[in-house]
Length: 376
Image (cartoon, rainbow, N blue to C red; front, side, top):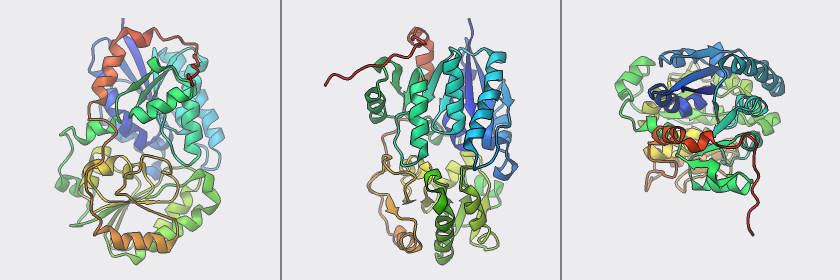
C-alpha cells in the first residue's frame, strides 16, 4: 500500500520549511508526495517562486491561483478552500501536511478536518504578537498530528488540550537545509544575483496585519533609517499580507542607490548562503529569530511581529521609529555574539518526520479530535 502525502505551500518561507520533508517522502518507498502550490508562489511581483519548486523535480506538482487582494484575506481563504478541496477529491491523500500560520495553512487544515483526512501541522505551538498567532493556534486545533520545533511548543499544544501522543518534536526542518552541505558557495550566490558587495547586511521587513493602519509610517521610518546608515544592503520584498504595498513603495526610494540591491525573492539555498555571510540581518522576519542565530549573525529585530517568540539574548530589539532603528544600526557592528543560537533541532527533522510516518501509530490516530484535560 502506497501512502499519499499532500503538502500545501503558499509562500517562499513555508516552502523552505517543508522542502526537506517533501524530498524525504519522494525518496522513501511506499510513499508518494504531492505538492499543492498557491499564494505568493504564483505572483509575478513576488518573484513567481513556483519556478523554484519546479526546479526541485518533484513528481507531482499542482498549482492554484488563490490571491484576491492584500485587504481581503478572508476571500483568499475562501478561494483556497475551494481549490484545495477540489484537488483533495482528485488525489485522495492519506495525510495533508501544512506549515505555520498563513491563510493557506488554515485552508488546508479546514479542508482536511472536514473531509475526514488526517492533517499534520508543522511548527505549531509557536508564539508571536500578530494575527499569525490566531491562525496558527486555529490550525493546531484543526490538525490531528503536530510536528513541532521544540519542547516549549509541545507543552503549549498539550496545554491547549492536544493529546500528548499526537505531538512529536522534530525540530525546525529548515535547519536540515542550513547544514546540509548542499548550499552554493558565496561567490556562486553573488554571481547568480549580480551582487558586487564585498560586505553587506540583509534587510527583510514584513507587514503586521494587526497594525495595518500604521504600516505606511513604519515602512517610511525603516527606509529613512537605511538611507541614513552607510552599510550596503540586500533587501528582500515582504510577504503579501495587508500593508505590504506600503513597504514596497518605501523601497522604491532606495532602488536607484548603489548601496542597495532589492529582490522580490531569493532561492532558499542561495538566501541561506547570503545570510550566513552577512554582517547582520535587520527587520522583523523569522529568519532573524531562527536561521540567523544558528549562523551566529547579529540581528536587529524591529517592532512586534516576533513578539513572544524565542528571542535570543544577543538580538538587538528596537521599536519602529527612525531614531531607535538608527541607534541599533550604530551599535550592530560592535555587537558581540557569545554563542550561536540553538533550540530548534539538530538538522535531522526530515529523518524524524519520515520515521514517524513509517510507524503504525500515526495511521491509527482517531480522526475524531480528542481534547485532554490537564491534571492540576
